[in-house]
Image 1 (cartoon, rainbow, N blue to C red):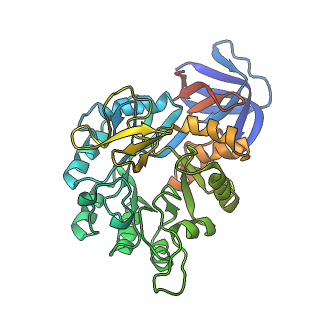
Image 2: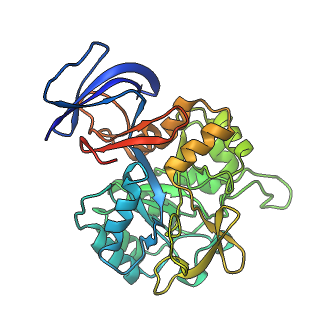
Image 3: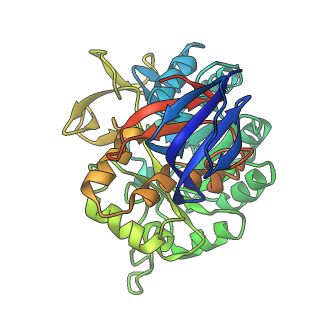
Length: 383
């Protein structure tokens, strides 16, 4: 594999910009220095902002391909779409479905493919509250049973994250069992009270899925005393990560800035929550597989079910970075942390997400407006 030099780039190292030269060898960042690097046999890219490849831990599809498609090539094509959006590592995300349908996805996801790294799956459901199901089919929602938990547990090699509702019976058991097999648990699509959230936090819960979208809010469960819901608790608790859709439609820019003021730069995780309709030229659009998914349409910069309910995003991580830079006062460094370092810290991945010696050489080179100029994957320039 050829050597690559990133010359006089402004690199995001540990969340801060530094003017450096970077040497990449055998797919790894081997040297970072302020001194010149002159190697006659190396390819050179000069200038720009160098940031670790984007990481998307909640994305359902793109360019006409969905995680739930019953097609062994769908995830490969999905990964190709992600890579050409600057996402070098991602978790394809399921929608609520039967266990048999999920098993098919698990089996496909275990197969190798050459594009953006699939580091496991994110299950959004089926353990969600019917009161906050959003675009998920209510008939496919499941109670948290021993059988269903064993099903997820036995697939812990490929399932790496799950969204569940803490108000469901046995939610504490879910957290404990899945935490012990290395599956990260995230709360969402819920009707939880503070007591539900605290009980699950003790068993490993440390994040909220797409905050402000189907995350419970303050209420009076006994008719008198108001209690915080998942939204308020996650914004308040310093330990919680908040996953947030940054398209300006699911969450207005003012609320994104509010979340940033509450959480700071370390606990916000940018996700696309993109559907297959993102960048798709298909005339028939679906949430879920083309065989048994729900028909959707695109209106006002977002994806809608046929009944007009908001279903998901059509905005990629790279587009969201540009949108936040243009429409908020959040510093460029912190916007980029939300798409790189923070999701990796949440997931416990220490070989990607930052630019430092020994890291995998998955890197985006950006201009001052956040637009991707080049993407480097496994040390090779692909764009």
